[in-house]
Structures are given as C-alpha cells and as structure tokens.
Length: 444
Image 1 (cartoon, rainbow, N blue to C red):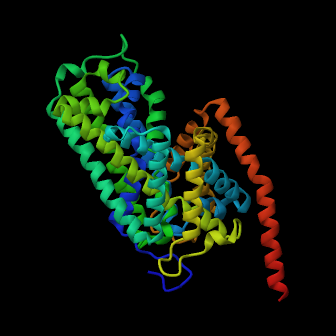
Image 2: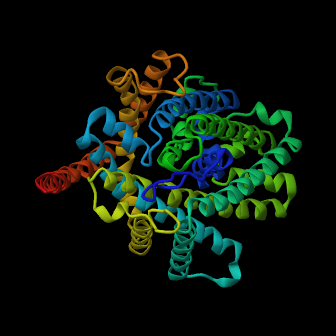
C-alpha cells in the first residue's frame, strides 16, 4: 500500500486481478459466440482449430501486457506504454479516442444488455423501453457508488460475480458433456470440410477474447504488481480459453452441429438439453450475472485512463483528484457514470462503438510496437517478466493485431479515423495549457 496520500491504494490481490480480467473478457458475447463461430467454420474440426488459433493469438497479445504492465505498474495501462514509447501526442490520441469512442458507449451497451436480460428474468414487471433504461441507469449508479468506496469494494463485487458466471458456464458445459452424442460431431453445415475457414473464423473468435488489456489500467492498484500482473494475465487468459473451448465442445456434442450453427442462443440450447426448462432459466440468469460483472469491471478499470492522462497534465486536472478517504479517482468515476447514462438515454452508443472498432484494433498494434521501441529505447528498464520467445512471439502478436485492424469494414476505418482526428485540436489545447502551467511554475 502506498504511503503517499496522493497515490492510489494497492489493495487488489492476485485473485481479484484474475477476476477483473476473466470477468471483463467474458461478457454477454460468450452466450452467443459459439453459434456464430460454428456457422462460420462449417464443421467441428475447423471450429475447434479456430478457437485454438484465437486462443494462441490472445495469449501472445496478452504476453505483451504481461511484460509491459509489471515494468510500468502505473494506472492507465496502454496509455502509459504508448506515452513512454511514442510520446504525448500518440498517447493522447489513444486516450481521447478510447474514452469517447469505446469506454463510455460500451458501459452503456452493457448496462442496456443487463436491463434487457433483467426484463426477461422478471416478465411480470412488463418493462417498457423507459423502464429498461431506468434499470440500466440504476445499475450504472449502483456500481459507480460501489467503486467510489474503494478498489477493495469494487474488487469484492467483481470476485463474487466472476465466480458466479464461471460457475454457471462450467455447469452448462458439464451438463452438455453428459448429454453429448458422438454422432453430433460428424454433422456439418457445409458439404466439405474447409480447414481454411479456421483462420478466417479465428478473427472474430480472437475479438471475442479481447479485453485482457483492462487489467493493465489497474496496474497502480495491484499488490506486488511485478509478480501478480503477469501471473494474473497468464492464468486469466488460460481460464478464458479453456471455458470457450469446453463450452463449444459441450454445445456441439449436445445440440448438434447443424442446430448450433443456426442458433443465436447456443448456450441456452445446451442447458435446455441437459437440464430442461430449468437450464434455459439458468442461462438467462447466468447472462445477467455475467453482464453485471463485466459492467462492474469496466467501471473499475476504464476511469484509470482519464486519471493517468490528468496525472500527465493532458486532461482536465480534476480527473486526477482522489477521494480523501477511499483514494479512488471519484470525480472520474462520476463523470464516466454520467457519460454512460447519457448514452443509455440517447440510445446512440452503437454509432460510437462502430467508430471505436478500428481505433481499438490500431491501439493494440501500437501497444505491441511499443514493446519493441521500449526494448531499444530503455534496455536497462527493470522487466520482472520478459515475453517468452522474443522477438518472434512479439512479431507474431503484432501481426495478429494488424490482421484484426485490417479485418474491420471500410466504414469503421473511416469513422474511426474521424474520431482520432477530433483528438488533434484537443491535444494542442491541453498541450498549450500544460506548457503555460509549467512556465508559470518555473517563473515563481
């Protein structure tokens, strides 16, 4: 724990760090992705291979963070690495674009998804659109309050809901494995097995395992970061990959490949086969719990980027203010919550999410490249963990992130580029303000 009154508290242990990573990566998508991957791959062999390729890619990308995070255990994660490697302009473009294009709208999207599942769980409430928006708003405000009261409280909530969602997924998987029929593995959605489909399908599968970077945002609040950051990254990604593959095998074996490929609710279908109507209700509850945990993970981690920017004097100074008792960036959390609520009520978060797709992929390329730059620029930097197989593995991670960046649509590239362009005038405004403050301080 820090003795400096102006620093964040290091109160997050290894288990909580793993919970943040697993809980944020495994969101609502896992309840629909197996069906989409199966439909794209065409048969069981390419499906499993696609998950293995995606898993290997995700591990390689996560290992980049496993080296950078403990070497620079500061709040802000990716923002800090890009800033150290490429300077203030590049890091500001990243931070600005992610805050307005990803962080706020994704929180609104998750809260809205929670409200939709909540309405299914309690049909008697007969929630209208306004009712669902009120539920989503209540969720954001409750979680903001929890995270204002200290990272220990936010971590405790994350631990509970991550364990709950993993338990539901494991129960569904085990139930599906007991109900599987060998003949289901021989069916396919195409007449011939196209193993090349595995590589194309691995791209959305890899995207489904994104989010591992959120843990790096919490680097300034993790106990013994030089040990716990790389451990949490590796263990957490291992759990995510195992759950995805286990769930896919259970879904295929119990539901049948042809049925799975056409289903938008593959996990619910699997639970229905294994446990009857109780299974479907269990999965709806699991999805609700999963989204709750993911939303908490975003409110726990995302505000740390704006905090880091403010600490660097490249964002409004009040974002760096810490609560005098709980040592949390309380103003930043409140502003993020207000921004998410605004997106909930305007309903236009999908437009901004589309803009952020290309920015997010491009930022991952920048983080991978920063590993090479910092190895050259700061060779004597203490690195508690060094990426295995460097530079080959780092090159592969960079290529993978580039493939993801190139896989987005032209429309997403254009809208993402426009979003990044809006950061340029903002950068010069903050740079001018920063330089003025430094000059006035020097004159005193």
